[in-house]
Amino acid sequence: AAHPMTTRWDAGEPALLATAMVPSTLVAESIQRGGVDGVLFDMQHGHIDVQSLVGLCQTVGNLGGTPFVRVPSADPWMIMKALDAGAFGIVCPLVNTREEAESLVGACFYPPLGGRSNGPTRPWAYGPTDDFHTTANDTVLPFVMIETEQGMANLDDIFSVPRLAGVVIGPSDLAGTHGYGFQFDSHDERVLENYRRVLDAARRHGLRAGIFTADPAYSREMVALGFDFVLQGGDLGTIGAATAAGSAAFRSG
Ligand code: 3PY
Ligand code: MG
Image 1 (cartoon, rainbow, N blue to C red):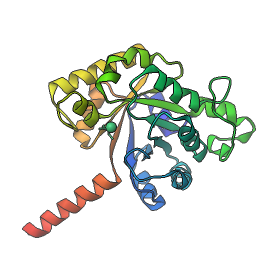
Image 2: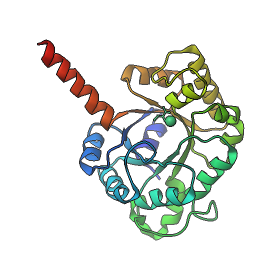
Image 3: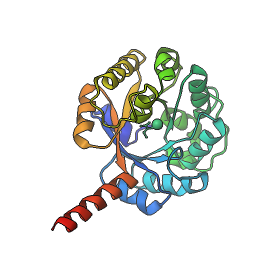
Image 4: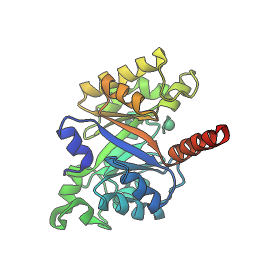
């Protein structure tokens, strides 16, 4: 089903998400009203738990955004809880093997496509409720994160899992596991070569590709490189950077 992210892609445009690490509907509302296509709620590094997810997904969904959740791992129970809370996109970190990608995708779809359990907490999140299983299967987007050397070694194995929607690069872990240091918004040629390899493989398998970024100019560069979406900034980074800039301006004034 259509939602802002897929509408962008249908129009041939890149999509823009931002990350929330704080479990606050006020923060989620503020980010979504900031002009993004959706918000990724981070259960891996952010301090967001299952209980808070429902209100967060409601906030973004009711404002017309696409709710995304980064789960901590490919464990099906957590993925299914995030989906029942109203996530349309699931981002699974540290995917190293085909088995992990299969676990992710299997949890995301109702039978006959997968093993998602029937528990319609928020079936209307998908639209009309008379056939929400089909609509859910047409709506949910599972993304693997490639952010390790092992993941890079298994790109084709992982990307050929049926019904995978795409890949998200975790730049700092990807550079870190290669021994280049935890780089973000990197111009290191060794790092960019990895990005090109991921993009090539994603194209071959018909997958969408995204990357976490901070700087908008860098985000545009990543779109030019071939990414379909960026997860640009978010709550803590924005608050910290704006406060630091304000403090510096005040002290030097
Ligand atoms: C990484 O840079 O490793 C990420 O997962 C971004 O959040
Ligand atoms: Mg990471």
